Amino acid sequence: MRAHYLRKQGISFFVKAKTTPNRCVYLPWLVTLYVFLGIAAGVCEPRQVCVFGLNTSSGSIAFPLTYVLADVITEVYGYRYARRTIFLGLFFYVVYVTYGWLVAAAMSTADPLYTSFQAFSAIDIDILLGASVNVLITENLNAYGVFKMKQWTRGRWMGIRFLLTTVFAYAIDELLYAPLAFHRLLSWTDLKTHMFDSWLFMVCVELMVLPLSVRLAKALQKRELYYAKTQAAFFQDA
Image (cartoon, rainbow, N blue to C red; front, side):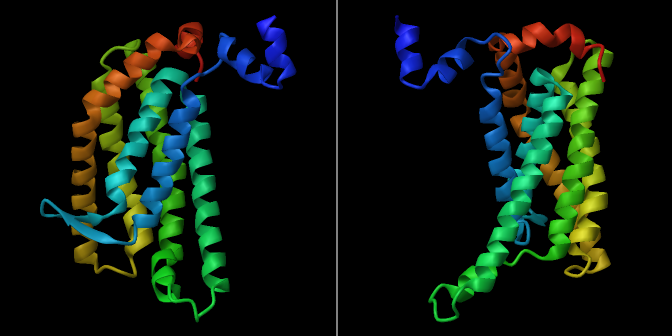
């Protein structure tokens, strides 16, 4: 009777989704947070900051958290879902930047917020290109590394796997992203300093949140029926 009443009210989808064994219950929340952090990192990226003596972009504060979420998604749901999440994050970042450019172009110069909005929405094309290359290559490389190392270790040493793949992916990230994004803004000497400081800062962020990311992944493994049903295939399929 209750199920029939709920279907009549037009919410049978939610009842079915809640009881479907293969549904990834917590995945939409992780994807939403990943997209939000990706946009936040991209918007703040042009602003340079100094944290504990390390010169880096302000996007480096939020950007490492996208790697953490990609690690967790790969560990629990597999590389396929991680790859989709990464592409979705890039898509919405490009949409956000494009919309900001359109609004800035159409904004009236008489608006009292015109100057400040123009400055805030001014994301250089070099930074957009660098961020796109970074997401397409290094984020995917990081997620694939977590996936393959999980196969090789049969799921053991989760924290070590997260750390090793991220440290390597961050190095590739700085080698690809920084020259593309900041070659017109920084001298070669300053660029090298920026690359090393950014890499070191993001590795430190990864180390600080590593216990949390491992606990989150293990908690999701216990709660997601999808994880229990797909582990045999996880260790076989690339």
